[in-house]
Amino acid sequence: MKVFIAIAALVAVCIAAPPDATVLKNELENIGVDGYTFDVETSDGLKRTEQGVLNNIGTDKESLKVTGSIKWVDLDGTPYSLDFVADENGFQPTGAHLPH
Image (cartoon, rainbow, N blue to C red; front, side, top):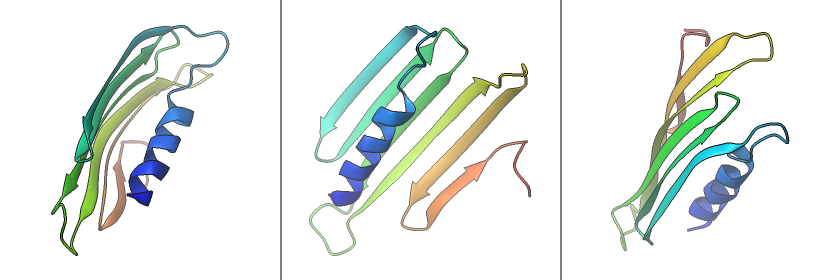
């Protein structure tokens, strides 16, 4: 549960729009103790989706699996896209701009 709270705090920081951007879309569904989904889009080109699911609820193998994607345009106009999975195996990002 501590991991879920930490990730929720990180989500709040990551989806906060800069002062010159407006939020175009902000959808959040808190499924309860077993998961959540959200979808955010801002006027500066940021798009982020994420889904968290609690696996093996009530067992000693209980774990949170988070999947999602982030798209943004850098200050120099370069577009970026990042997909990720975070689970018991750690944070696993993929993107064309990342080293292989």
